[in-house]
Amino acid sequence: MDNKIEFLSPEAWRQWQLELLQSTLNRVYERVPFYRQLMDEKAISPEDIKELEDIKKLPFTTREHLAQNYPYGLFAVPLRDIVRLHTFPGIKTPIVKGFTNRDLKVIRKLTARFLTSCGVTSEDIVQICLDPGMSVWIEELKEGAEEVGALVIPPDPQSVENRLQIMRDFKTSVLISTPSYLQYLTQIMHKHGLASPKNLRLAILVGEGIEMSSRLELEQHLGIDTRLGYGITEAIAAGMGYECEYREGYHLASDYFYAEIIDPLTGKPLPSGERGELVITTLAVKANPLIRFRTGDLTRLYNEPCMCGRTTPRLSQIEEHIDGRVSIRGIKISLQYIEALLEEVYGHVPEYLLYVKRHTQLEELELWLAINEQLFEPSILGLHQKALAFEKRFEEIFGLPCRLKFVEKDHLHETAKGRKVIKD
Image 1 (tube, rainbow, N blue to C red):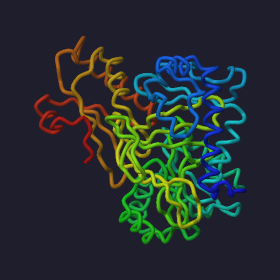
Image 2 (image 1 turned 180 degrees about the horizontal axis):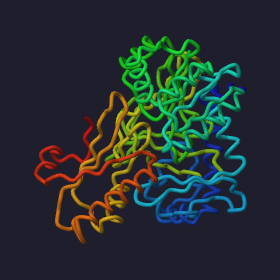
Image 3 (image 1 turned 135 degrees about the vertical axis):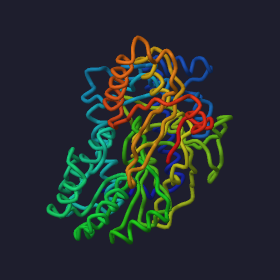
């Protein structure tokens, strides 16, 4: 695979990104009424973007905008050109992501580049262990690994013990998972006195960050190397950012994304190294371009070249989500979506607390609801039936089980102390 693109000079990057940006803006202005209206309201046209710095003249877009244009409002190509659709939870309504054939080829290329940069080769046996709620990630990672030429074992609903047996019997050399699930696997191996699978040499961790101390502990215990990857489902699940051998941040795929860091309160751009919210503009997406999309992820952007020689900007690990989302086992859960689901089932939104518990290292969810009179309408039996309906809908939407628990209001207040999410 030709990775010379990652070593362009800063001047070459600026020129190329500007050309891609101008082309994207012209296309969405002509073909997507939402973007045209957004720019017209600000009295901005694509011709006003003459330098990369001019991008700050454009308005931001958010997940609310994506949900408001459900299902096809943001497509920049005719529906006949779309060959694949994904839906996933947004804020209150689903978000739809479409792909042209060209988009799918780009994603495979980017994901393959990510895996190759991590050290995956055609000689590897790659096992993917991710929750069903990360189905978009699973598909892209599987196809990216196949693009590299590796043998791929996709995830299945088997128990952790069976997955460990497959890892040993099939001689898995690369595991792709979340940090929390790898920690869980390690705990199970320790519990049963199992040694690390002897062929396992590399774990690629996505969906979450991990403390360096925990990371080094895992590497030492399992006798493996680890690499991290970053992406957002709205753009590309894996392959947007990836580590090189020096592990000094995620190298951004700058031939397909332009990144900014802004002050989340004022929206003003921040200089290199400052902590702020990541804003992404896609540069080569045909079906669903994103223009100045606020990810809600707090991070830092470094523009200095890496020791590996790549000249692409690097992102630090995500430090926090600031847009009403919480990350559970790599799955981003919107509190607004939970509230919409409560409204759907109960007709109102009771006071609640999302309680995240750890079973060894695997996170489990409970949603505590403060008892009120409306919950018991029309009967106690109805309360139980609605609770089951909520739990079923939650798992269908997010791919994770969530137990509903009714508690006294005073107990919820005492535990929550004004918070809506507690991780125990």
